[in-house]
Structure formats: structure tokens, C-alpha cells
Image (tube, rainbow, N blue to C red; front, top):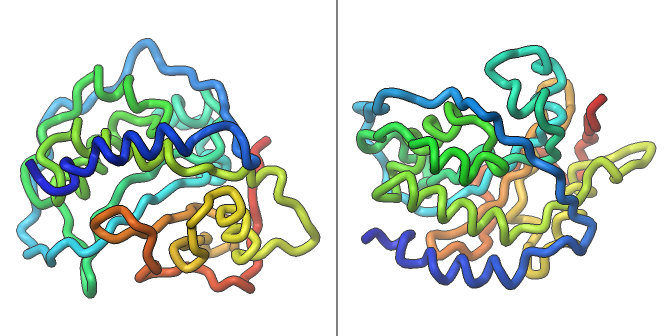
Length: 235
């Protein structure tokens, strides 16, 4: 059993005690498709030597911006047409101390339907689940079940503020960080990376942790506190 998996029980206990509907968070209804586009083949590792794992990043995608130009795309129907998410989990990433992060470390068997349904409301795409398990999960976890179990414990332990209510003449990355800090006791602003696209719209918020899942300063902090942020709220 790998070290991340030994911490899973503790993570579950911590998440169960910390996640609720207070602190400005939102809980949206989630519709799971009757038929899922499941991956059928294993994903193979790459040939690039991997640096040792030194940290984790919980990457949360701002779904309204992702879906802004994808509402009619069949591949994203579950996320962008059948549901109206705020944040969804992009992935739990393994980071290195310097240089390229570990990636595609071993063969990744295809994720099964039961696993996809279990975690669909967190990550609404079977193909995305397979990609994240193959690209990142294989570098620290022995199975997709262990990888998504750890990701779900972390996801449930984070109170995600309702950024659709964050309004003002000028919004900044610092204001987004402040909203997460206010909602999550013990989360320091330096452990929050705010990422924008090249037009200045919010795409992701990433929480950075050490290998024991303690919050730590992000190696890639994203937008500076004073950077202007545009937030697409859907519609």
C-alpha cells in the first residue's frame, strides 16, 4: 500500500467533519446520464523519466467558463447541457519540487462504470477520469479506486465559495483567494493558485499541498493578487 492510500482513512474522517453547506458554498443538483461514454482500453505510460513526487495540487475547474462555448458539444453534454455546475474537479495532480511533474507513470486500466457513477458529480466525464487517472493517479496510487477516493476526500473537505455572487466593479485574483480563505479555516492564500485564460476569464482555482496533504505554497501561484479577474456566470 502506498503512502497516499494509508492517509485515505484520515482524510475521509477529516472531510466528513469539515464539509457542510455553510460559509457561502453551494450544492447543485447533479444529473448522471443513463448511458456513459466509458473508456475501453488501458492508457500506456510515457517514456519520460519522472521526477520524485514532492507535492499535490487539487485543481478545480470553473465549469461556467469551460462550458461557455461547449454547450452544444456532444463530448461535454453531461457537464455543459445536462448539468449546471460551478466548480468541478479537474484532477488531483502529483507535483515535483522542480522541473516537470511526474506524469503517466504506469499502465492505467480503464475506469469502470461503477467508479464513474460514484464520482461523476465531482468529475462529470468518464474520459476525463481516465485521463486524470492515467496522467496523474498512476504516479502515486495503485488503483483508480484509491486515486479517486483520495481526490473525493479532499474535494469534500473544501468549501467552495459561490463565485457567482462575487461581484464588483473590479474583481481581482486576490478577491478570489480571499473568498476561499474566508470559507476554509487554515487555508493560507499562498496555497491558492488562480488561473486565467488569455482573455482574463477565470478558468481554475488550484489548492496546493505537501505529500501529507497539508496546505503549502504553490510552486506555480498563477495570477497575482492585483490581477483583474473576469468571472463567467453562465447563461
